[in-house]
Length: 222
Image 1 (cartoon, rainbow, N blue to C red):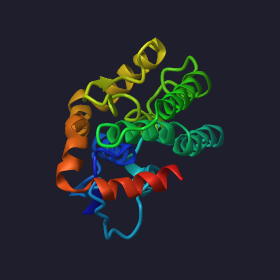
Image 2: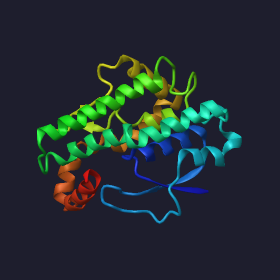
Image 3: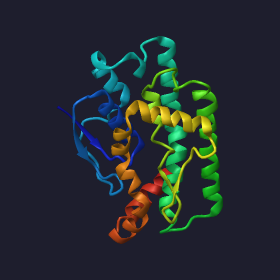
């Protein structure tokens, strides 16, 4: 049986988890604590397209279409989101985790939020447009990879949840369709760890892990 080394606070890990569960792909869950800096000895980093191709006999075509035009659109989104959508959301998340322990200039947070806003604009206007899902009428790997990002990952310094989709009815409706397609129970299962992160700054501070986190933080922003 395939072993998946995952920390479900990570958007790519959640995407792989959601996809494998939704498709009934058997795997053994191996927890990796990314915040603590634990690394896996797994042979390579798993991607969604690898899972699709490995289990192509049991994966419906709409998840990762074989048609050249649709496949190109899927790859365009997958390439864009890594350095843009995911990167901007991750930056806001890291800043909000850091603030209670080591404050940052307000202008830095404002700039990060603006970049995230612009990436959400592109998601809505370029990739989703007026479609039901990113590639068309059915869910795909693009939706599974994108969906976990801005929904519940952002926190105010006091732990209040922030929804990046607030004031965006088109994205809110899309979120509902993706959640329904994946299954509400599966969605809740994938996001349990994330919903418990409001106390993460204090945990880092009290456990002595903050300096390790700070080193990774500096590498991310330099």
